[in-house]
Structures are given as structure tokens and as C-alpha cells.
Length: 360
DNA sequence: AAAGGGCTCAACCGCACATTG
DNA sequence: TCAATGTGCGGTTGAGCCCTT
Image (cartoon, rainbow, N blue to C red):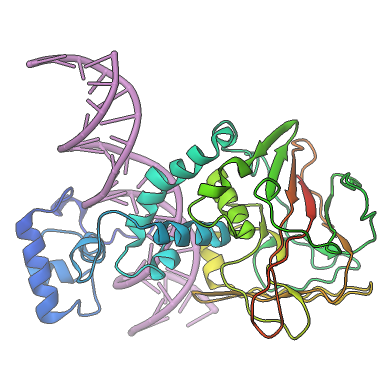
């Protein structure tokens, strides 16, 4: 048996709100508040509307300090960055943009911002759905898999990191098998940032170079990680996201630290994500220290440092549970910019090489 | 001027979670 | 503990507007 409807559908009005209805609702709420019960409100206010409809109308249109109209570049940047990090959690994104509603942001993203980004990266238009593949169904995270370092309390499908040595001098990607995610990062020789080598991403035999537009990339060409995340956002990725970076980074415990983290996760259920706290801890047996914490606490998202005391670092993420093999795709990410900052919080930027690939 | 195709965005729908009794 | 109910959220829809032909 399904649940009872929230109101008598036959006797409630639907469709656009008239100015009279708006005035009634506004006046009632300003006088009496919502009374903590939206379902009962329309009857009290003399409206032939469903309570949910009243709530929506109030929240999205009538309540004070709502802002409509053009989004600023700064708002664009925030939306892109948050979307890349947390996906379509519009209410969380809206919380960062005073006066904007989740509905507005959702509409703006779907109708304008996504297209705007795709225009900047024209080749993406042919590859909008490449991540994840429609048939890809990640298996549940296997907590009992051997030799994994990662612990998580989330509902995420999360790849278990494991570290091995790979040839850091090689330009070729170390490919082991389709169940592995390989990440090879050479951080031993900083070189100046270059507009031409920030990020490129390939799928199968297709190369997509987003750097053509990097000088105009929503005004933050100097942050390759934001670009990277934004790039994912533009490509329509919401799940199976391979992320480099975050919108917020804390200082490290000393020494140089990689201020952005790399992790791979699968967002199985956005609803659950909102309430989950994720904590990863990666230990490293080689001569580097690496700690990664990624916490989602309520609406606060914090990504702490991936600490690297020393140079060359090569590691590989291995997932112990195999994705489906019959829909193998490959995404390679060539990441030539890592943003570092010093332990005292004063930011020092180095650009270093890195690359990874993701198979599923 | 008319047709029609695309776009926008307010509103609806269904689902999941939270709360209450 | 469980069912009923309320709330919040994200995905989707469709009326109306705009632009192109």
C-alpha cells in the first residue's frame, strides 16, 4: 500500500500562482509564521493549495531577501566548484549563495552554466555522457577485502588505495589491469605553471584538451584543480567521480603539503551522502607520509591535506572489487599541476607533474 | 505575419529521511 | 519498534516566451 497523499488532489489548485494567492500566503506567513505545519497552512490561510505547493512558493519566490536575475562570475565559480565536489546537492550549494534558491541554481546549471562550460570545451559536447557509462553499476564496497588501508563509514563505493612503486621517469602510464586505478605522480621537479600543460583528458582514442580556453576559464585559470573539477562538472559527471581537489583546504601539520587531495569515489545515493560522514585514512609504507581526511559534516565540506614529506611519489589505487568488465572504458587524466602550500598557511604554488588513469 | 522549434523557469512529483505518537 | 505523518530534496515537466525561418 502506498502512502496517503499529502492533500486532496481533487480540491487543490495547481499551476501558476496568482498575485492574490501570493499576497494571501505572504500576509499569512508574515503574521503567523508557518506554524511548523505546512500541510495545515493553506486551509488556515484560505488558500486552495497543497501545503507543499505553499512551502515551495514561499521558499522559492515570496520569502524575503530572495535574489533573482543574473548570476555573477563569482557565483558561477562557486557553483562549478561545489558541483564538481559534491554533485547536484543544490540545497547545499544554495546555502553558499545567499539569496539564491536551490531551484534557481538547479535551473541555472541545467539551462545555462553547463552549456557555458561546454562551449568553452567544445569537444566535450560529443562526450557528455562518458562518465560513468550507462551500464556501469559499481559493486558495494568490500570491507573485508585483504590489505586495504582505507576505512569508511559512508555509503560510498570507494576504491581502496594500495601503494606500489612504479617507474616515475616513464611518461607512459603504468597499466596493470582493468581492475586497477593507477595514479603516478612525479612531484620531484617543480616547474613553472604553463597554460599549455595543465590538464588534458583522454577517453579511448579521443584527446580533449581544455587548455585552449584556460585563460578564459571562468576567471580562475591559475587554479588547475578547480579547472579540473569544473571540467568534470562540465562533462556531466556526477558519479564515479575522480576528483583532484576541493574548495577548502586546511593547513598541514608542517612541511610541504599537497593542498589538494585525490580520491575516487562513487556516489551511490545523493540523499544518503548528505548525511554521511566520510573519513579516509591512507597510510603509506614507502618513505612518504600521506594522510588524507575527507570529511563531510552536515553542510560543511572540508578537505584536509594530502601530506607528502618527500619526493617522488608513485602510487596506485587498487580496487578490490571489480567493476563490470563488459563495458570497459578508459579515462586517462594527465594532471600537470598540483597546488602546494606551506605548513604555516602561507600559500606557495608549485606546479608538478602527475597523471592517472581510471578504468571502469 | 505565422509557424515551429528551442529555451526558461515555476511548479509538480515521488522518494527518502525525520519526527511523532 | 513501528506506522503514520510532515518535511526537504532532486529530477522532471510543461506553459509561455523568444528566436529563427
